[in-house]
Amino acid sequence: MKLMQKIPIQLSSYLALADAVVITDKNHIIVDINEQYENITGYSRNRIVGLKAGFLKSKLTPKSTHKSLKYELQQNKPWSGVLINRKKSGELWHSSITITPVVIEGCTYYIGVFRELEQLQQGIYISEDKKWKRKGNC
Image (cartoon, rainbow, N blue to C red; front, side, top):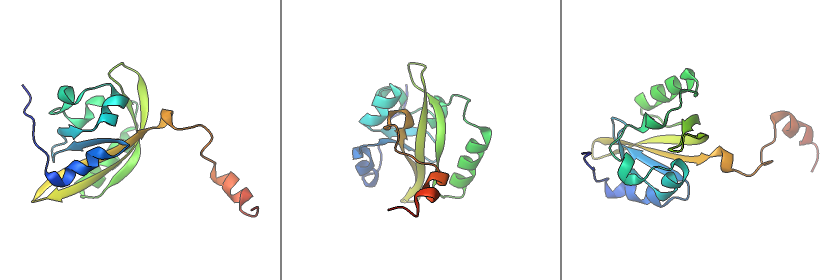
């Protein structure tokens, strides 16, 4: 049976964000998630609280990405990037995530806030080349 850890009150407001949120302890054990996380991954809160955050890994994210993530978090710095994860259904998805360390009363927590890139509207990004070409135009 998994032990459910209660999160500090200072972290509870993150769970109200419209983006998906996962909160882990210093050992990257999931201590809470919000409803959007459940909607994207297909996993219920009761099923994954107490698991390591990396249980969604697909092995398709480059090792260099995981190395960068680990290094920044060990330095107690935030990290942003894209991870390729696997939903409960087995479907792959791209997660644009920012993970921020937060220290409360001497305990470190990691707050991951992400969006599923496949759900963003098409045509909202332009390349750097196009930006420069348009710079002279109003």
